[in-house]
Image (cartoon, rainbow, N blue to C red; front, side, top):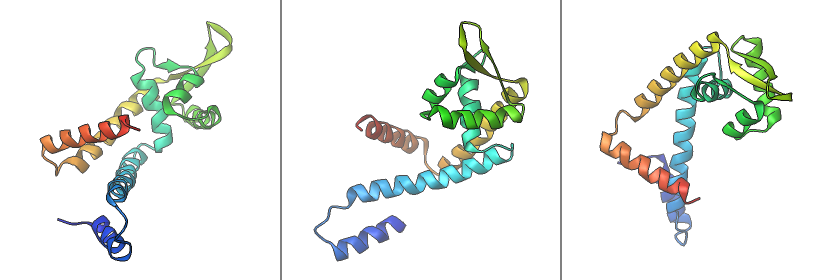
Length: 160
């Protein structure tokens, strides 16, 4: 079975037979899968009135465990964002009542961000919906092929 990437690679093979385009095929498929999966997951989160950016904050706090709070710096590091980008997300989530900021009792200059009960509930609902969408996208692969794909992608990431 072929796909659009095979067609593109065939065109390159015709025009530039001297090129080894295997890497282009791998990363072209990864980029397309990322776009398709990202769009589908984004639609799942939109049902809850949040975008991926807001979900990332809520999910990071939710998976941090009780008391579901972190410093803005820890949040930014976990999401690989600048503190400025994190602040804008926190402002939106705080206005929506999903997170609250409070002084850090152990650092007079610091603050902590915690999930509100509403944010906790929304994080649980959104992660369930997003995961269901991701599982739907993988459902045509037999479990052993999905496991093989996981291993190959992990190997690729660990090698970079």
